[in-house]
Length: 111
Length: 149
Image (cartoon, rainbow over all chains, first blue to last red; front, side, top):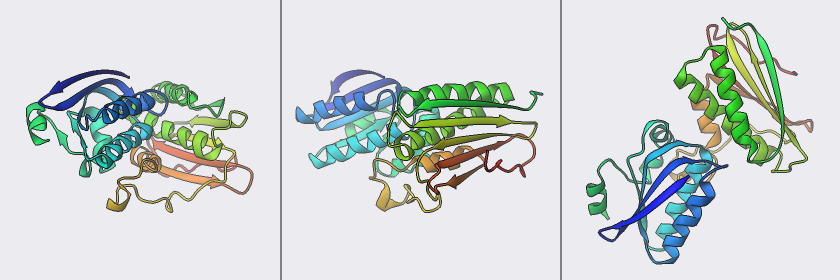
């Protein structure tokens, strides 16, 4: 998994690419989000547009990130999941917990 | 039409081997003749069964093997994932989609397995290890798992 971070309107936009699985990416995502939260940057938008694959390990890590953020008074939202990743988020009903946006501007404004 | 066949893979219980099993599943499913989306779905189900076997069945103990048997004929592809664990009742696993379970960070593997193959069965758990069978039908939906293999 690769990641690029930028700040837009006080929101950390974490652009991920590759895959987030139990074997690849799960630990990286944990460390990236943990670093942001410890720095007090608790409004995080995770862009999944370039994440091509995820398994239950990746789904679980997204939930773990969401829980850690909310414990610190923050929030994590998702931007543009596609293909199988979008299917898995919907199937697992995680979209009832993690707000999903297709438009970045709309997502930023929602924080 | 691909003739009937059987491919057996045995790996130590390491998380890194999940990708290997997934890759082999993709190759076998394509060989058998499933299309792109079916290959993707099968691979995800096999991956989740392998994760379950390595993590929960064998407790990530690399001395314990996970065996994956791909068996196919003109009707279906059956994948048996075997570990040394106690097994589980797939119908007794908490539904991760219920509101009270959405915050759980694990427990979604069975949901994904059930979603992406035609049927799953769990055998064993009597001290001799457990077996998760995944079925993906090509023609005849009545194919059953070869129990005791």
